[in-house]
Length: 314
Ligand code: CP
Ligand code: NVA
Image (cartoon, rainbow, N blue to C red; front, side, top):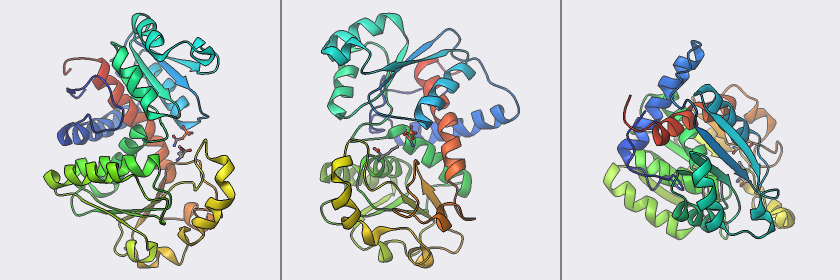
């Protein structure tokens, strides 16, 4: 495991550049072990509570399977069915759960709710997606970039579409490891200025390049990776119609990818909407690594869990 200087991971900002790179490398090691049939029981007897206020396939299953493979247990907790769903406070929930289990992964709407949980819990809190951030996704994304390129330096990743949670975490994570991240998003849907300022401040110390532009065709020039996500995130369903219009010229398709590097790779956090943010030809084509990327969620999160929970370096 990697020795980490933080109790919680809410946005990747809590981790140093060295810690993010070490986590990615550790995840690659755990993946090799797993593929050779070895699953070191680093978290024997440890329990992860997993609170979900939104749907999930990858996050839920990879965290639960990951805990089991590490010798521990992942416990699914529906936000609605907890007393939290009937108005018990986050603070009281944090104080109680801290005495039963060893860590909490939470997927919810407001980022502040996760910060509040982290403040009052004595155990590690992991953000499994909020409206603001998706740090576990970004760890798996960085791992995929590293597997493909063997380095982060001089690598250009272009995110096309909605400046959402996934985009935010890519900006911060990319800044930490020295990537060139360009977000191409329409006016009104650009990433939060605060996140961009934070990412640019981190980038100043790592050699990363962080930029936000409007024109996707210009942005993808020379891209090593093209990344997109859904145009309507969970909780925004009533905006679907206006979003379809706003993002109409941001589809990742054969025309858009022409200016990228010939060997560019396509990334998507999934779930995807073929025919909206990406065509089937691209996401199901030979340059798509989306299933490798989804698979890496398991290994990246195991690296994170083992590092947050196993304590001293083994
Ligand atoms: N990418 C991702 O977080 O997927 P789920 O919503 O299925 O967990
Ligand atoms: N931006 C998407 C990501 C899903 C994994 C959402 O928040 O719904």
